Image 1 (cartoon, rainbow, N blue to C red):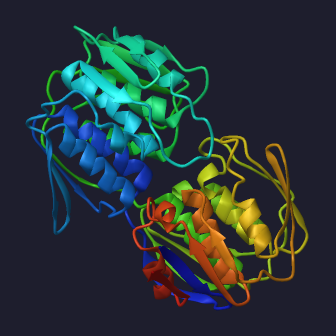
Image 2 (cartoon, helix red, strand yellow):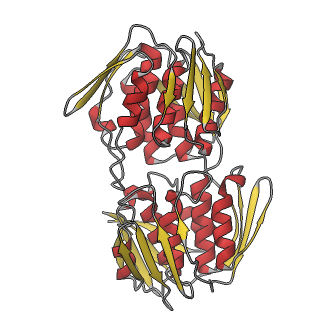
Image 3 (tube, rainbow, N blue to C red):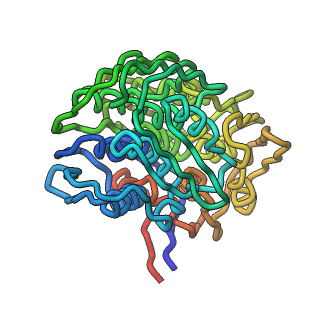
Length: 418
């Protein structure tokens, strides 16, 4: 069994370059199969979810290789329409292969996706939208079957915003006949990144980043070299770590503007944050003031993927805070682990009430999901004594090397294999 060992009590300082974006690269990898040719992705993070997606691409006929500057996908021969269940069940984002394979081969058989247990996240929105493009959808207990003779553009009206469903319909519509209009589309930066990638490949997409996206179908796409944006959640995680431990750190990446809501919260807690075009500098004395209320929202609101990390920081802030989780109903699983470390947190439905304590104390805790695991690492950095965080396979789904990154900033942290 592997775990992360953290000795708390050190201030963080220095400079760090942020890895490529997990949430952006997965739909881009899926999108690569729309073109019968070569895609090169620079700044691709070497994380578990990327390796899972590579296995999925290889299982349907792609040739995928790591090169010095990134990842190369040869999708000339995509020979299979059925996606291997063992990989789909391990990662929620695998569902975006549904839209990509419909766009490439006009048919797909795929099982229901897995991933972190942070909520139900039903895929009804995905399937209802796909049907609007002249696709027949058949479901049973284990599998989803989708097929069409001709993909035809349509008008999609999402009942609620969904990042995954927006990505799926974009992927399916890129090579459909005619025009597809997506209303109430998700506005997250990862949607903009996907559309930017597809447009460089030859797609015709406008409106990305707004609630209305227009996709004009094209017949062919082309080879592309694409440099991936930095990971805004990884950057936000390390900003939160500095806020809680104290110190002065400069983080470099091209996702600074996308972290505006996180920066606003950190400033309210008492941190000094300076923002440039490609860097964020944060200074904290480690003595934070509680926030009255933080609510997770769709972009540009405060991201649900930063809720656990901020909750860890609030657990030692002076005063009481409320965190309202509006996106995923099971995102408070990390609370029980923080309580083991001395945190005083009470959950009632989608609201967590946090009373700041004088100190957290190192102990053995377990990551139960990706971002919760990152939150526990932050708690370990702030705690008195030594913490051991198990369940690190969750953390490695999104962080290329969280121990190396934090050691670069002066933390006493290491991965231990037993």
